[in-house]
Image (cartoon, rainbow, N blue to C red; front, side, top):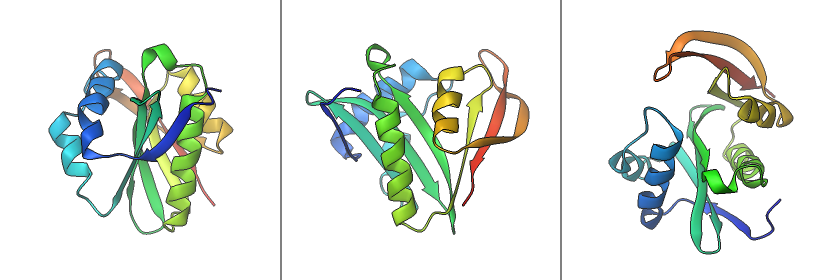
Length: 148
């Protein structure tokens, strides 16, 4: 694990870097405008991982009563496999719990084995499938939950 990783709430000044990571990571990325909007929401919790003064990754939650959905978990490609996602994800779950979240859900590409292993390591289990949920390429999504 990289010792120089700081996990903190996402700031408006992070959005250009976050949007670039999003665009490099997903076939249907959120725009910078979407991230600026999400930062205004009381029901959202977004974190960034910062390494050597630069944004290295991000992840977020949209929070409802007692449950939350994980969105936009991504790390710069050059830093993948170095524990950044694990540290960031653990902090996201901790902070969500501090806000009263007891159950967490997410969707992940069925072929994304690295992400699935990370989620399973954090107590998530697959409870369903959304057929052909993703495009470019078309692929099923696994619906995963971590329930208290």
